[in-house]
Length: 324
Image (cartoon, rainbow, N blue to C red; front, top):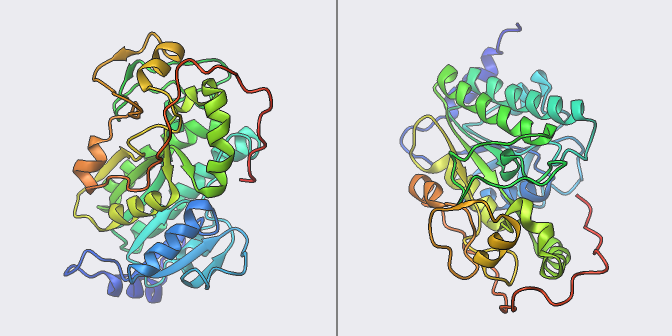
């Protein structure tokens, strides 16, 4: 194993500020992605310097707040080590975002290697705060080849996993890696279990699809999170005082469809044990862990006109999704 550069180690150690939980410089991997771009802009707005690590440089990262850019694979130890100069917190977002973005080995192997590498190099250099993008897909429902159902609702962080796909499995391993790194390096790591991430473009595609065909949203339990709230959750994950490893669902408190949650669950997940009332469009996720740990509550929620159940006219034409 190569030795850590004394120059880099010294620069990282000097960046740690025990007097303030606010990081002075954050490494954001996957900074050119949907969430990464908004995270970069938001963190710069909070006054933190941002080093962006991207697989390909889109050329405009300085405009959204990154004053340093590292280009290459997050699984490359040398690249990550250099990108960590002066960094005192990491937000790791880089990943192939679905099992459809590569072969099973590329998705699982690439995602898990990058997470291990980023956290290991950060830990060796003295970085003690990290947030890692996990996913609601860890439950196994969204990408399964057959219809799966949750054991109970609202789903919490202890819900059983039913994994059948390489992407969901990579997130399970990422969480295990994060927990190990917390013990190995004394890091404080939060795995943020994101649902469908929405912005104006993605909402314009997905809202009519699910309104006409709510079955399409059943594997993800009709949940969503505005990308601005995802950025806020990431900021809280590296600034709120906490210790050790934590995994939390972060989502909007309501669903992405104009139908009562109770009717949706009765129609598409009829055998799930209902453990708490979910009036109106309440999301079938227990979001109390994120609220207790981070003080997180989504602020950008949808105001949808209620529709009668069941839908009268199932969708005939499926809208084309935007590029990932």
